[in-house]
Image (cartoon, rainbow, N blue to C red; front, side, top):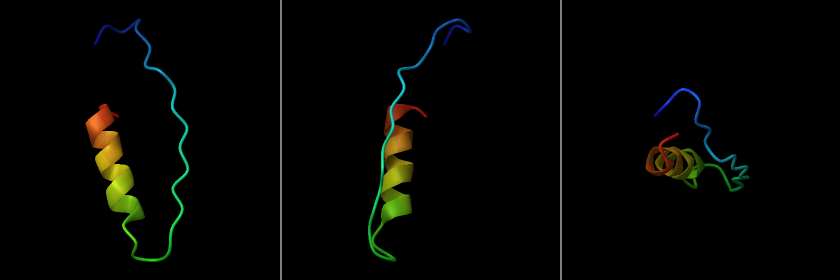
Length: 35
């Protein structure tokens, strides 16, 4: 990716109970989006 290009900004909120997969879901989303 060229140094002068910018990625689109995305804000998300992940809510859930303990051990419901929040970190796994967030990690997968970041991986899929290239973040």
